[in-house]
Image 1 (spheres, rainbow, N blue to C red):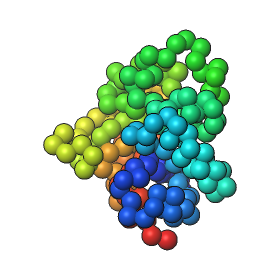
Image 2: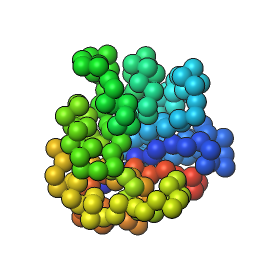
Image 3: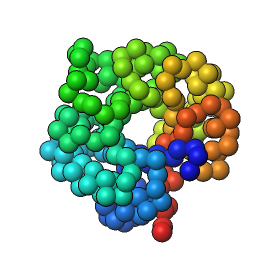
Length: 189
């Protein structure tokens, strides 16, 4: 796949048990899986993270954790995706405890540039299109994505309302790839 497509999880969306759906997703070989299960406790996230990390490694698909830095430091996934408020609060030198890649969840060019200064290797920019996750909140749109990609010091991945049909325009806008949540719930291999 020339344009990287990442899966960001939400186990509440899937009709099948989460780990069964993950197997179907992994069979499609996404560029990576971002385990975003924000309602779990740290202990629950660690338990699920171990299982997801094992499945991803077996499938040869990079695994990223989301928000739970303590779990990432302990289990060593390929990356950690951090909301900007979390990234801003981390002490200097924190990356020495985590050797993987670091992504930041951004919603503006200022945030993307700040994330890069704080050590992020890449960023998501959201939400580009209307999405069920953010009902009533207007999307930022392709033009905003284009401007962010043109001025970002790090790769930017489009997030929010992304479907495979939108890939050509995302690529043209300069996105390094896309992150999708809802589309993966329909995967049936």
